[in-house]
Amino acid sequence: MSVSNEIKVYATQVLEPWPKATFDGLMELIPQELQELVLKEEGWENQHGNLARKLMLWYGMEQMGADMDDLFESVQYTESGKPYIVEAPHFSLANDGAVAVCAISEISTLGIDVERMKPLNLANYREMMTYMEWREIYSHMIPLKRFYEFWTIKESVIKADGTQVNPDIKEIYIQPDSAFFNANDWYIHPIDFEYYGYVAIMVCSDPHADVDVIQVDIPTLFADGELVSAAR
Image (cartoon, rainbow, N blue to C red; front, side, top):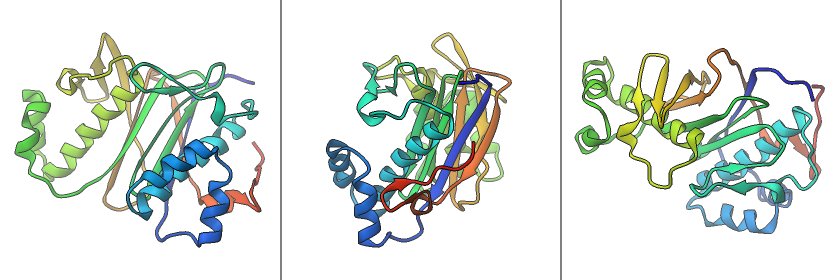
């Protein structure tokens, strides 16, 4: 497997529920225990988004030439719950409702998060931001958008770090192009996609990573219960 600093970010939005036959067929592609986790999600959007991010991991790993034998059975977890696969590319998954993202890199440790910008009372989150971050939020033309950008950065950093069970989100210090946490710098990459009302941000350990955002349609990737392999 060739090594590069390219990071693939797969993204999808499910606009309406897949036909039952399609959903059931896609569910059969993942182990029973993961199917049960998908079905525990509340509402079709969360179920579809959760399933979509798992299948994008499968697709992305295959595209990078990773060993696909028993992919999902090979997933392990750190004490904080961060998933990883030994001797496989780094990855991070997220979904908010039916928008899902999956980031994969051969060499960069990373974390990704996506959030739907729902209305909320920003004052309730004051203690989770530093003074300078809060000033920037309230001086922004759209304070809610800036808040969600900061929140998504912090969530991504927690995922990338993966060492703390109950991290203090206020200890993540956001700078223009990076965030500092637990003695490490994490480089910020906003994810540019066409899903209105969502913010997605990835952080990674490589300051010079080349990020490629690929929007996909899950049922198109998997036909007749098999992955449709594209040229790498």
